[in-house]
Image: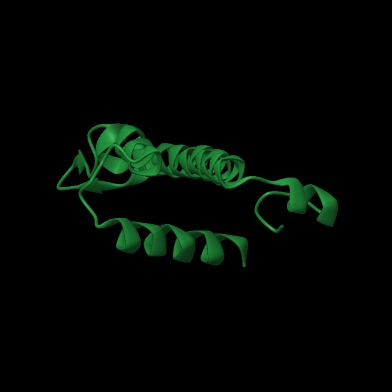
Length: 99
């Protein structure tokens, strides 16, 4: 209910497993877009002033935040983390983000 923005128990009862999984994936992608925007703002701040020995700490935005890699993880195309560890990491991030 919290993540899917559903308040009607009848709608929850009609929800199929594939529809639930699709809605969760959409929620995760929406959260990723929010995370991207947060990192983009932080990137602009970093580029405005942070340097190491006179050079920017991150030369490109992709090194600061790899959107494609995070998206692949959500869509199940990146297997660098075991599924349960990946899911737990994302759930922890979401829980911390929402609090």
